[in-house]
Image (cartoon, rainbow, N blue to C red):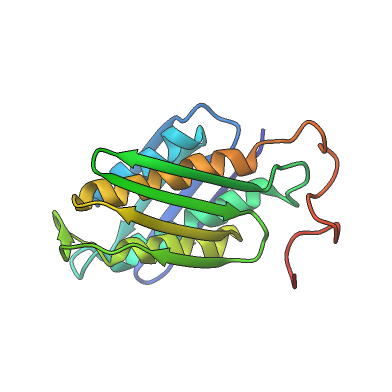
Length: 199
């Protein structure tokens, strides 16, 4: 089983994350931020990656540190579970409709982190959560997971649908990319023989 656990402890947050890439989509998530929990549950369920997250942060200030650091922790756990990324498909893409909304996510488990974020919101908050924090989560996740990640909302009106379709798109694209390719189980999917570094 490709699995890993990480802990991230700072003066602002204490976070633990465990992932099993070859799971069933089972999740147990408690960050103290209800909407973020809901999104991480979607990530787990639709990627079939088992996910456990525990976070305690300075929520009395705002949700920024807990949101960002949970992205770092989950991403780092994914990267550790992938190891040298031998045998994976590497690329994944998903187009997710959610009622009036359509979002597209494409990614490369390249070990070269990069985020392209083309998502706009019409409201500054969803419940108590600042909508600008979703980009922070995706940025942190891409950075620590070593993933080139492109997220684009093509159209939509409902802000909840927009962000949820982005998380579901990440989940489905990630599910494709981390699958083991039976045609190359013993090789790294790169002409360089290693993922990461320069193109």
